[in-house]
Image 1: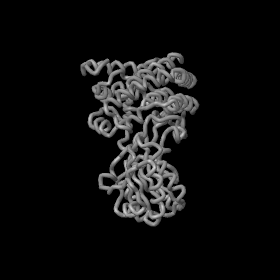
Image 2 (image 1 turned 180 degrees about the vertical axis):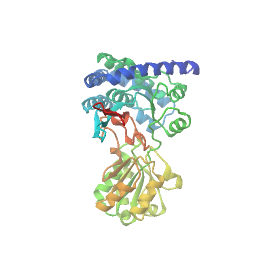
Image 3 (image 1 turned 90 degrees about the horizontal axis):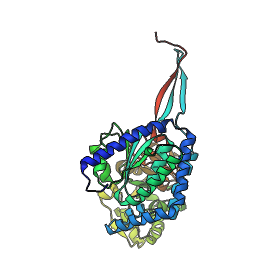
Image 4 (image 1 turned 120 degrees about the vertical axis):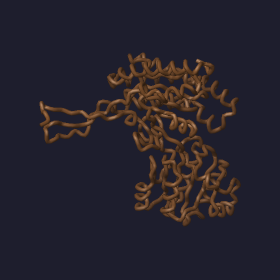
Length: 430
């Protein structure tokens, strides 16, 4: 299908995908754990076998994206290395090794009437996933949906269309090899944005939408979607260096949180430093950041310290900087009086994604964990760990800033629901 295809035919195509997915979801829900795991392992083996073909497809995408003027952060997201291709296969194998949540019964309690009441974990059904740039999402999403007994419709970004098509063939091969319906994972084979509009207004066939993309995409979906969503907007993540911090830890954490990768949602965008330690820690960090040519947008107090340290990439912070997800070698820096001001700043400007404190003070640790209202709150660790793979989920389908239905990295349990089950012995209600 091409971009010249009419909106009507695109809508009809998405409806057909939805019908197929609904049918496949019933087969997936009753498939055994062994069968679903077999599919995952077959897909992993196919990815390793076809690594060269996947690299070639990715190169076609990268060349087209560069020619269109895509920025460096997005090109970084789009690129697949030999390591990341192997990582896709490894992620599937890790998901296969995870306990199967489907059918698990918990919270069983006897009631005075004699009945026993509990909850069973079940698949959500059909999950629509809309994402940009990163082709590894195709495999992460497919793997988690297969393991959790769901069917999925994947609509990747136009910039990754060649790689996503190649991956779709391998996923279908693995499903068929395990005796599962190929329609359990369907990749939308068009770059036309009308497909997104069709997916998000199809509640009769799609049970939930998971958008992974830029702020513009999420805002559009919030306006137009009639299908429930598991979403996140920005990744405006903070690291607060407390005046009771270990300096060595603080420098390593604040450097890694910003410079490990720029184009990810768990990258630090604002550094907060307690005034009592700022004159000691900022020059140490400035030396590290200078090597990466990180631009620091600093408040007046931090500017005075950094200018004194001779930092070459220094500008004045504005109000907008505290609200910006840069996805680039740019960092906002603010000096705060202490923990209270740090928590207040984070809860005012954070996107409720991931925020960290560096401190050796236990009581301040507990306050930060309790009072910072974010999906992941960390102590003495880089924000870059806010990731399903690092959390032991095997992979993630996204990171949710929402409080309902899932929060933080969304793994297997986030793709399931609970229903009540009742066991009786002939009881009737009087």
